[in-house]
Length: 633
Ligand code: PRX
Image 1 (cartoon, rainbow, N blue to C red):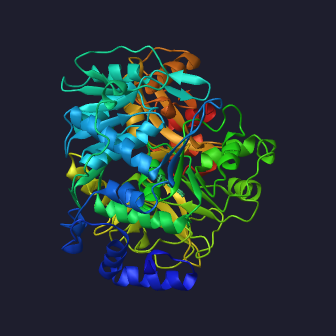
Image 2 (tube, rainbow, N blue to C red):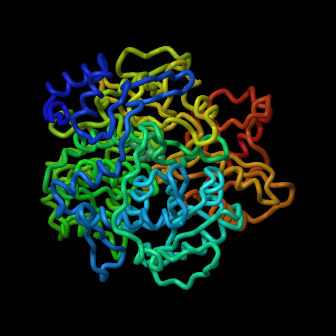
């Protein structure tokens, strides 16, 4: 497969030079030799960052599910594509070969067709981590419907916002979900959400928990009722390279979530190529990414990337703490997992429980460990390396975003060495740079700057659904001609990058990207709250946690009561992941003379860095700062 596999540093250096000096030739080669195209492209890349117009492999025709499934069915029909480990230990695991996966996906695609779904329609998927989630995603791709997966921990209001934003007409859900010891009635949440949506809605219900559910005969369909009568083959619909494959919502600095739109061909090429090289997948490996398919990590590195490479990918329905904290390691042992990819917050939570939970499990099958979603601190990195990798597994700390579709900065086992707390080097074709506040490039090493990328890569998002202006403003306006990531980074003397964290109003809590604005909007709906400001502060397990500074409308309310009311509101409007750890009532918030809340000061106070508040004399109300410090939590 010529330059598809990078297996030593010399190879990487050559390929990296080619990928940046002659990206057209480089990507032309990768795309031509490793995928099945119905029609080849007329140009490899066309782009203009000022207008945020980016096209890859223009005018080519393909279907991503043909590349993910059918071609492997021809070569290796009995190889396991998906392994499913249920939440409950006494329930039997399931597995699907490539040939079985094809049938399941085709049947689901025919069910969607029978409900009237066609190419270009939006389908919202609100399911737990069960095989039907994978089938639904791939079934949409099979018929060219645009999937919008909404993480099944989001509230009904958050779900309704997402359904309405992309005007989806079908929601696929289940009666309920099993999560650790709990059962959640998902259908109920969907029913609630649809009260806020138009009357074009249909619902397809997967049977999982045997929950009691309400059925609206004109709107709701049980999968079991339809699936037995559909054909088990469905032709893949031919898609244009730039046809949207999916929408995935991510938080932004303003209230409304951003529906990032990903294309078909570029996304396929890049996720597949990064998967193969960063995880060094080999024929008999079992690969496990613990993310939920509701996030980009699950889209790219549970489904599309691994399946495109004909890999065996494991899906786990449950949580790391159930029935106890050894669950992850038991699963690694049970399936002889070779690559294990998880989030730093999970590592910190498991490390806290001690090595007793690790020790009785055979982890010798592990070859490569990965992390994603937030910076990993050195202590957690060392624990992971020593106790899980037994100091013999390289750790790929993969930096990327919902917007980037695939991994942009990471080490490559046996090629680019890992370095604790560093994501290390750009992947092939990725041209990062650090800018100072004036937008000038920082060329020296050992400096921190704003992380930007100066050339497109195939899986960069193409737009924000329904709002291209917002796409331009958020990512391409801060620094002319560059994609601005919203992250800060440090580059060491060897050119290794370490991500230092967000430089905007997004806070990463337990690996979840949360915008402060939507949380503040939710809180401000409380009838007694005048104003609020949310900032992040360091947290042992979550990485960051949320601290709310709240001013009330005159009356005094108990701190405890207001905290629980606020968290109820947040759970309802967004979901429990956005709850506040600390709530401080204050008589005012520090503001500039133009009335802007000085979050920088609040961030310092929340992090107990009282001595580095900077100059506060120019504030409109400097006296409030002392009050906030004195009462800080
Ligand atoms: O701040 C970076 C952080 O997560 C953000 C992207 O979040 P999201 O779109 O939810 O995607 C997460 C999964 C790809 C980034 O802007 N982030 C992601 N990976 C890392 C990271 N921060 C440090 N190190 C990483 N490896």
